[in-house]
Image (tube, rainbow, N blue to C red; front, side, top):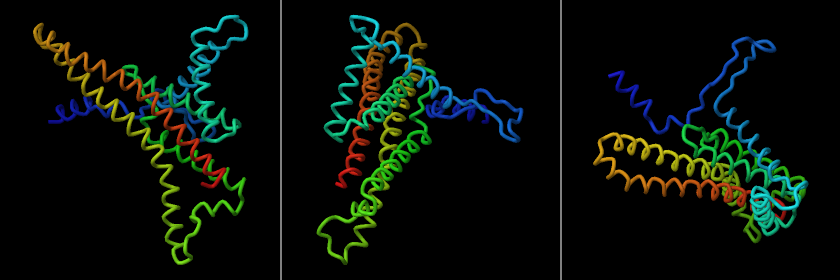
Length: 257
């Protein structure tokens, strides 16, 4: 019975989302503090390295003709710049939005590689990132409008008797942004990767069932490839939607809409 449970646990499609320790230093450093390298930390370093490397390869200062990487990066930059101008109207926030977009995009794309880890499937990363953005947006609104920022929670023309109720509703709606922003990213990525894991396991067993079954399995395998392509598109869409909502939150903090 224990062997069956262990096999079910190992083959679980949710196993790929676990944060595991890859390297641990038992020797205490600075007292009782030890160092542990997890897959989450490792892939965060890989994502940072990829982002810096891609932009270094896209550097076109020395070459006369732009490279493919340079054209791709310039296209993405133009798209994000256009979004920031339309949503916020101030390019001062462009570096933050552009960096956030690339971080989520590379994290999602890297997670589509078999046997890799997707850091956006970690609740700590997704919810932590959204809560950090909400706190930053709130500080931004307070620094611009001071005490007038709290008028954001009181709709104009509200009767005095309904102010306490509407303030509570608006406050809950405002705090719910942090959850919805992170959960949207987390849920979409987890759902896609779980589906791919289940289908790949099923296809692997079918491909091992003989020549006739192998030929028949080519049809669902083509569907699996199509779903994989869709998952790549979702990786880009989720990164774009995430920064688009962040832009709208920044705009609300600036203009108190």
